[in-house]
Length: 97
Image 1 (cartoon, rainbow, N blue to C red):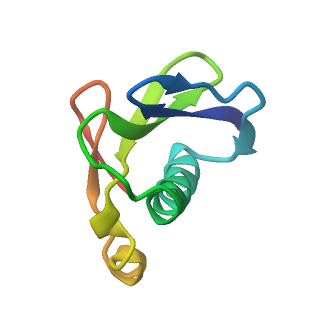
Image 2 (image 1 turned 180 degrees about the vertical axis):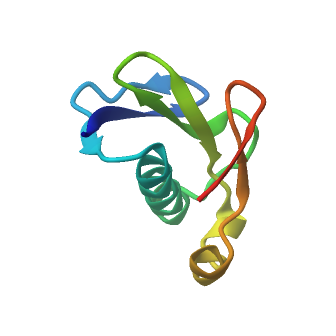
C-alpha cells in the first residue's frame, strides 16, 4: 500500500508541493526529500539557515520529517549513501533510514 507525500520547500517562505508523489514507506519519502535538498543546495547555495528545509508531509497531513538544506551537504552526498543521518521526527522520535 502506498501513500502520497508532499515535499514543501521552506526557504524563508513556503513553496508548497500541490501534486505530491506516492511512496510505499515514510523512509522512501524521506530519502527523496534528501535528493530535493541536495538539488536545492546545488542550484541555490546563496544562504543557509534553519529556515531552509524540505518538509515531508504524508497525505493524512502528518509531517514525517524536516530535511535541512545546507551547502555543506552537497559534498557529503556519498556519505549519505553509506551512513544516512538520524532525522528528527515531528513527534520528537528519531527516524533512521
